[in-house]
Amino acid sequence: MERWPTPDSLAQASPAEVLIAWDRLGYPRRALRLQECAKAVVAKYHGELPRTREELLTLPGVGEYTADAVLAFAFHLHSVVLDTNIRRVLARWNGQALPAVHQTKAERSHAAKFVPKVPDRAWLWNASIMEFGALICTARDPKCEQCPVQQSCTWFQTGKPKDSFAHMRKTQKFIGTQREARGKIMAQLRLHQSLTELELLELSTLSKERFTAAVDSLCQDGLIRKNNDRYSL
Image (cartoon, rainbow, N blue to C red; front, side):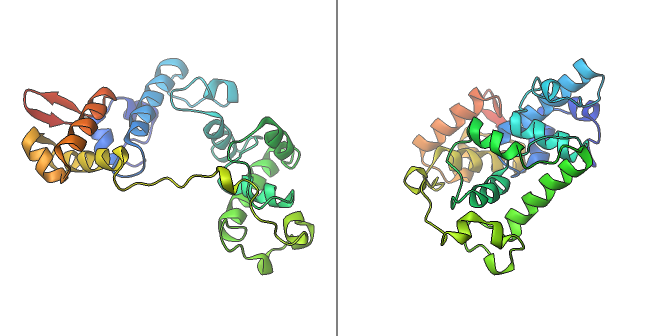
């Protein structure tokens, strides 16, 4: 935010600068999508982020959750924000330990009934329930003894039944995955800017097979590039 305070300033940065600044904030593809979004805002909306859900959804990398969150927290407008925490709180009020693995239209319709219609109260509701889910109604070991709405929580009142969707949930592993290999390569290029293939292979500590597969996928995604025998962001 300090380095690129406006969409225009971010749009003019080089992809390498953006990837270096992004560091380990999440999937590096999102960094490029964010810059693509900034360019679209400059080109289509004169550098001002649009204030309607329909227009926000036309921007690169912006899905329903992001659009709703921007409307609520950037513009204090009415929207139905359904992050992990809010979904869990509403599921428990409805008697479930955790929400379904995938969000449904029925879930969104149910959630919309709770959000106040007045914009100033709507965004505050979203922020409050999100915080409530993060601090009190947590996924593991919820602090039910501190819960101010314990008496109206169907899940609590019915004895905290087990997660009915547990058999559908998969724990994502990281060690040994392509994601881990890509992360190691990106980390070295952020640090050294440019490396030969041999240097990058040795610094990444990956096997030749995993290294080759990860490098190829990073090149295909436009996150790194190869010039002669050197790789760079």
